[in-house]
Amino acid sequence: MSRDLRDRCERAPLPDAEDARRRAWSVVSAAAPPAATRSRMRRWRVPVVALLVAAGAAVALTPPGAAVGEWVRARVTTPKKAAEPAAEPATKPATRLPASGRLLVRDERGIAVVAHDRTRTVLGRYDGATWSPRGLFVAAWRGTRLSALTPAGAVRWQVTAPQPIRTARWSLEPGFRVAYLTSGGQLRIVNGDGTGDRPFARAGPAAPAWRPRAGHVLAYATLSGRVEVRDVDTGALIASPHATVPRARMLSWTSSGRRLAVMSAHEIRVFDLHRNSSRTIAPPSDSGFKDAPRARARFTAAAFSPTGATLAIVTRSRGRSTLTAGRELFATRGRITGATWSHDGRWLMLDAPDARQLIAVRVRGAPSVLSYPGGRVQGWSP
Image (tube, rainbow, N blue to C red):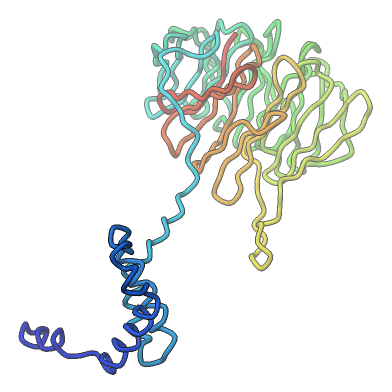
């Protein structure tokens, strides 16, 4: 628009502007006090904005004055403050691990041991790793090779699998067996000194779990989702619940070895081997809006405390990840892909790849959330 045209538009009178001004003045003057009292009220002048609001309200009641009323309201009405998104739980950088022991962490440089003071010892470019029961050794794998290392990185023994290795778990006390799973679904057992490597069973992709206080007893999920608990030395079947968990992703025992949790994306089934029973935990499935499509939540992590029967669960729903362990402890918009307990059962270390950090959440005691450099936790040693 040219300057001349803009000036002409600004000087042009509003339609019915004169009639609107007369109606507004009649309303204002009628509300004014008599002349005798006006002098006493001069020190209590009515604010100009209030008069404008009154005039605008009266004028807006008639069609010719509607435009004037809208103009007044647009200038004297205070705009509403925009709603702010819910704040993220505050995390603070930590200079030390919140509990004793050392972390195994996988990042872009490979596997590293993180000491209590956060110093890192890089072991090498491995795909994954797991601690021995006392934290004296690390079983790490890359491709088809499984290696036993010291926490300083010295190799003690190696075995070569027939297929690429997916995951491995070192047995609990006394730690004389290592179970590892290949990409082709072959579950294999090797002795703690690297001897006796042998096939044991066919299994699904979930990492197997050694039963506490039971020697060399291992739980695993078959390709069909059936859960089996066997003695790896004799092959004897200890338990095989009738219920199945298709596409199982994680297995976790209580510290007593009585209950076993098996997690898939949309179901957690907790088996009680003493009572030969089970119960199912399902994530919420309602989106929260009457006419909205159902947005089913999913589980991304589940693990029993090493000191009791508290089950930590991470649920992803409506763009948020929520950690619960008997009660809600932490929530974030980012993904949480893993939860690892400290050995005293007081802390949980969370993998938060979107934030490129680890998040420690206190489970027992005063609430606290700490952050550490990124990576994914492979284990927390005693």
